[in-house]
Image (cartoon, rainbow, N blue to C red; front, side, top):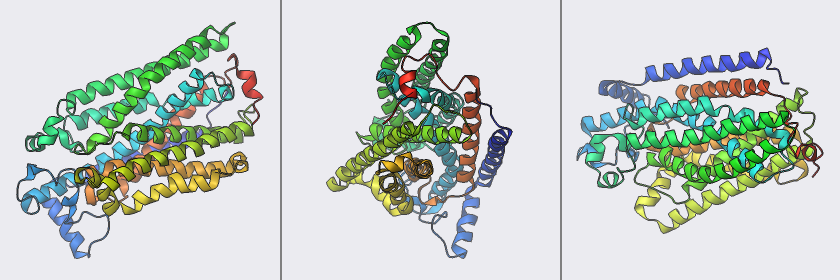
Length: 445
């Protein structure tokens, strides 16, 4: 049995406290009136301006400033200052949303990977099942947090979703045409369906896994196999719809038919990477003695392969839109290249070039510190990817990595560590009665 060390427990609590305090400070520092915005912009101009601060050209963001809701004077007067006010008020909300979604998508990616192992009757991976089950434990608090944030955003408690603003919708024919789908009630109902299905599978899959430990035959394993195969059908539909609702709708004038797969590739590789990092950590502490270099090698192969798959999807989406140069489509990328140049191209280096160079060699996949280095860069890269998908439509040019962004990551990192490693203490680290467990223990690539 795994025992959570006092140091790790204390670290997780400190991260949560520091993150929560910093995030609250970020909300309190956000301007509350147009006069506050004018003071911020005047102070910024007095210091000569700098990249990423709240600038006077912040109306260039597509989220609010390019809609007709602000009238003919959208580039001047109080309407412009109100737009910048919304952007700066969005900043801590968007930082919270990015971090909440990023850590939730890790656990969701692991859940999908876990279901695939059962449905494929995989023989190499059962020794890793308890690590996967522990990571998916985060889906419960993470899912509740995401649901609350979505409900607050969908009913216009903040300004994250432009389609939730009645004033904007009243002057935007395109959003009006999508209002049958893009509305607060629909968003909340669909989110409840997604989360209920995912959490139900997680609950019963873990329950069956525990019962299989005490069983005298393979009844519970067979139930897990059937349940996992059915769940994957549900998952592939709901994951795509989730990506439309929770991310793509930040830019309601834009859409991509590849977007669901693109988001899936990001959450899938992030989940597999997290399995590898936690497994290596546990082995360094003397646990998981039945996990060998070949298991790490296979996890690293998935990290490499899905990184290439993610890059293929990113390039396919980007190339077709950029080459066709249709204004309502290409503006999505122009905004990110012009205003988020560093993060836009930086994530390509982290998510493709770095893992390509580090993990393409088969021998390197067995070297723990190289896998850890690649894994950290991949996770950071996919956080930046989520950042790039959400921030341009919510914060526009008023972005910079500041207190809310850092604090939100610390808060959810602390919560993730606490939940996952606490879950590891709930059951033996070996699923001993899995019918493929001996094959898995003796797996050699």
